[in-house]
Image (tube, one colour):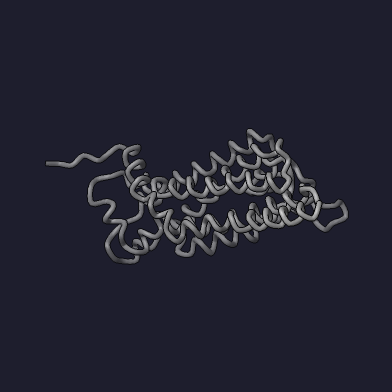
Length: 262
């Protein structure tokens, strides 16, 4: 009797359901803490300030959103979560166990990434809501939520792809996030649009900082329509997931051997 391969949708659903409990283990709570700790500290400081008679400070919200959540915590979340997906199975030689029965291998990276995306998106939404208590502008809340969730989708997908393309994918991802992205202020408009920072700021309706005309290599900061910025993040993420599936499909998978190391 020949076993028939399940459909890609069935593979995605089964993989995501089977892998979902992993997000409630140690790595998942580290992911949650990366959002909860800075937002919680901001809330605590806000409460103390209000007890002393001060009002909520929108500038503090901008600082926490752009400088902490967007520039630091969001990339670290991707660096933490992505290796826990399909890359971990390759390194631990457990991927063949997923393929005992015929299944479309190219669907596995997204199937294992969806629980991490959902878990991270939940905490990012809670973080954005928490910043509103500090003194955020209600009109900017939808854009901030879409910016964080859209960037999380793209950054998690990018790191998953990097983990399959390179043996040191986490290192290359860190170099991208913490060397390339901060240079957005000196990039010409075309290169600005090749950063997550540009699309996040376009969606959020605010910037982490401005450059002055006299600053060395300073470039005019352009914006993209919010709908196009969100579309760019979603399409980029989908492309990275597709390429990750293609790479896994073409990777010889065995119980041992360097061929499983990417």
